Amino acid sequence: MKIAQICPRFYPDIGGVETHVYEIAKRLAKEFEVEVVTTDSSGKLSKFEEKDGIKIKRFKSLAPNDAYYFSLGLYKYLKKQNYDIIHAHNYHAFPALFSALAKKDSKFVFTPHYHGFGHSFLRNLLHRPYKLIGRKIFERSDAVICVSKYEKDLILRNFNLKANVYVVPNGVNLKEFRNIDEIRKKKDERIKTILYVGRIEKYKGLDYVVKALKHLPENFTLEVVGKGSYKPKILQLAEELGVLDRIKFYQDLSREKLIENYAKADVLVLLSKYEAYGMTVAEALASKTPCIVANTSALSEWIDNRNVFGVDFPIDVKKLVEVIAKTMDVEVKDVNLLSWDDVCEKIADIYFDREVSLIETF
Image 1: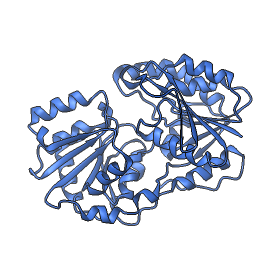
Image 2: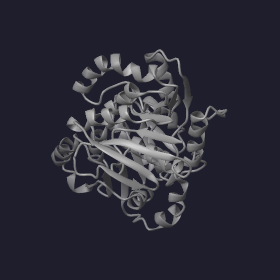
Image 3: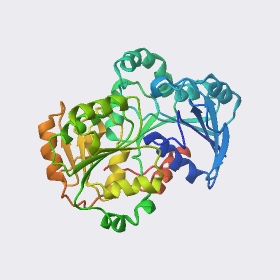
Image 4: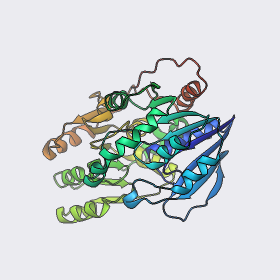
């Protein structure tokens, strides 16, 4: 049995889709031949390597501002291959479309990670004509797997689907978080840490957190884990507001260091306009760190006003400051998170047309 996982970016890149594919692929590789077909816009990574039993095949791509990941090499390669199952990921980049167009007799499964918008004015403008060809991914799918109820509802509104549509939320590698209590004990209680983890793009709302920092006491700091095209704007804003010295930037962290950042933070803040799930929220909760999210898209599904608190759009910075201050002393309790083992089992059930039990998303 040969299974292909197709995605625009993969290890060592870090992100929600990258983590999703990696966690699924390494578990499937214990029983099947698994190949991840992806792109490398930098041209610096190995064209072929193996990791955790996964065969990784990379192709050069055109990815202006870390978008699109257009690769004719990837498309030509897929047309020559014969897989039993093709599982494509991410509607918002070309590899999934190329997977659908190259499909032969393989079962074709699609996880869109769809939020319905581009991440900038230009991308949003291009999103509309792309939808005319992007719908072919759904038309050729034998099954569509969404990571939230929000994503499923959005897809059903925007596309005419014939395939079965399932909701299988992302998982958490619970073993990674088994020493969280010990890590949290090492935190410096004199410092109050606000954490942001993710791509640094305008739609992610990091600028609101920087503005809020200006109105919080001096012992409040911000840690930003990630990279992206909007980072220069964030640096400029922080300098203008006089808070740059209270912000630490990290990127390409190991999993161990990232989990340490989660555990030592007092609150994670994610004010994104568009999210199909919110992987960083799940990982923060697994680290017993409370969260503040924008009351939008799939992030709304996390809000319980016990462990996760919401802020409405348009973001009122004064209100955000109040919520951050109140959330600092929240103790996270009674969180129900799926493990990646559970997620992979559900996805395998879909692959092989087994009965899929009902999944409550959160």
